[in-house]
Image (tube, rainbow over the protein chains, first blue to last red):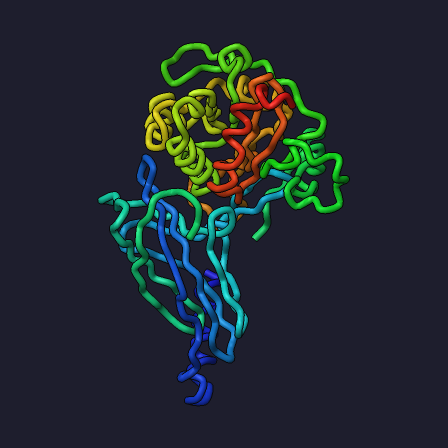
Length: 146
Length: 220
């Protein structure tokens, strides 16, 4: 509820800004991939976002037409890895946000078909300022990150 | 977004010391005289080495598995994880499997990979078997009652996995498992000598697994 209100407020403010701001390069996706499910009906996906603009933005959520999605945050503390919902993530100008194994990931709970290696999966990024951005990321097998 | 914190058991604090230790390979300050086989390994050396723990759990065939007895004489990799794990567990399994598949059978046959579930509620023997089979049908999957799994972790001196329910932002009934992120490696002489934290790569495993398998014959 609070997040939705925040998004609206920010969008209004953004809309009131000078036209130059709307031409701001903003947040773009520089890479992404997903791991093919091992067994079961969930899969993890990763993206790297770069804020090439002059204004900060916030990744509010990531959704997918393949099922429910949530960004989860893992933290390693003293050899233990813990996980929790990530919540909104700010991306300051010139900064990047990398979702990567062992850190943050998009957890996709698949509602129908199970993608395999070689397929691609759609992800929609919801940015507080930049709005929606839908991309497709390739599906690869588990193993070292590229 | 509050993170649900928990008390850190003493074993975990002991693990902090291990985690804080530099990678042996990167230890430029180590005396030259210590340039033995352990120093050349890519895993984190455990000092002092720990004897293999004694615990019995149930394998995916429903049979008792006596960890110490049934892995006797093998290089043994021990990991506590769960099949709903987004990446740490499957990445470890995928990397180890890929490396074992590239080794000559004479070497890979000397290695046992043991995966103990920390989520027995969801990881039935069937679920565990299906998960491990995607990596290597020879990987051993173990389960048990929550108390038996806790006892196994205590015996291995591994911080106990925890079931964590998110304070906010979670879905109804959703829970996460906090668990040790590293793989424990025992050499064929039954001693736990190395830890492999998350982030260790296939080329690190490719370097270390043959050395773990041949440890006794290295005259360490």
